[in-house]
Image (cartoon, rainbow, N blue to C red):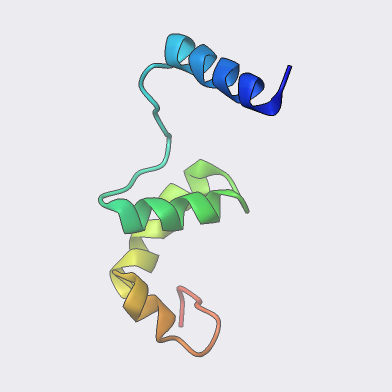
Length: 76
């Protein structure tokens, strides 16, 4: 089976089993979703849902986050 065939079979499987993609992450826009997804690679979705609102309140978009010249800490 070629890589393309495996890919097609995988997509077909998920279209049948999970036709609507869902996430446990809470988000309000594409930026908050991508930030939450990146954070969820480091901890649980539950923890991300707890800290993301404060983070996104302080840095609501990519420009405000990119302007930081030091690590971002929520309590600073």
